Length: 200
Image 1 (tube, rainbow, N blue to C red):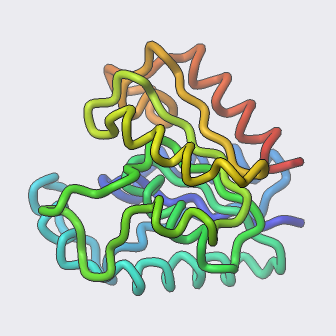
Image 2 (image 1 turned 90 degrees about the vertical axis):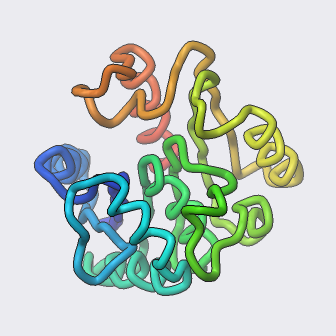
Image 3 (image 1 turned 135 degrees about the vertical axis):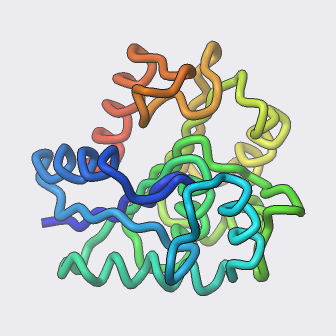
């Protein structure tokens, strides 16, 4: 069996991610969810979480994702993540622990005010990543398309890495049906691509 670490968005562990874990367990993965930026999660206020994120060491964050992988009991483990979890996914993909990775609208470069110690743009570590699929929305205000194209360029010599951009999608269009930006058709397609990629 293949393990699968699901990295939450910045809002953290909640019933939404219990559902994702259950769904992906039904797909045959030994799935677990993690919120890897802190030992004890801050409150639910977004500004409080962003302030805590700016204090969170990226190397420790990757270590926590690797520990979540080990907790599956599987030698082979994949990783997926959403929003800030998508950024964390691409950083964890360069750790050497994961077989494949899928990042959903993960920032290519985290704004300076949110970047914790040890943060690097993911283009700087692109060559070290395991095979990775990065999914974006063209209308995402947090991830400019020029940064998406920079990532494509960094992966130009990596046929095992791919970028998919949904032209009419905004940030967060896949994982949370309660978001106003949710797009059911694009979300279904992105999930299908994800499963195909992880099973390749």
